[in-house]
Amino acid sequence: MVKGFNLAAFVLFSVLALVLMQPAQAANKCSVTYGDVYSAVKEVLFEVSDKDSRSVTTLEIQPVWGHPELRITIQLSDGGTPIVTSFNLAPGEKSISESVNSAMKAGICDAASIARRVKVIKRSVAVNESLRLLIDQLWRLDIVPQRLHSVHMDATYYILDVYGQDHIRVVTDDYDSPVAKWMEEVRAGVNNK
Image (cartoon, rainbow, N blue to C red; front, side):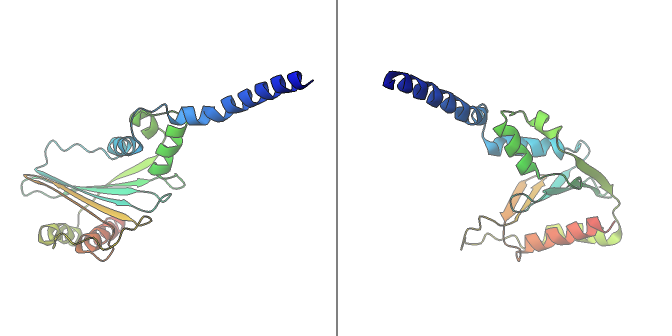
């Protein structure tokens, strides 16, 4: 009787261990990190052609976990009108971060496959005089490194990338910084179209 019980317990625990290991194994199927996949998915979703641009500026706002990310791309050519493109997740769409997390847990690691599951609204924005003046303020922003006083794990990140002759990248979670304030003004200007 004890021998039969031991065998039944062994089989039960073996099956239970196998069932519990499946989600963990699926999560470990990806040989790349979450950060790498997340970045690659955003590049697929927020792609613009920059072949005629001398300078490309991206404004990315990454709210706290679970809220939708957005990107605004500003392309500048020689003296022409800036080309502004706005990317927002479709209404009701879960955030890119949540989509990547769910896909990786299911063992889906390919950025293109994950991106196909995310609905993004890409919109060309007409540049009026007030938006043009906001864009021109980029070159006068007070971008001075600040000492880190605290780390905010649940903060919204403002990411500014300027590609031209040089590459400038500013990442801040300080809503009161000149960069974050400027980005919010541009966001409001783009969304008022």
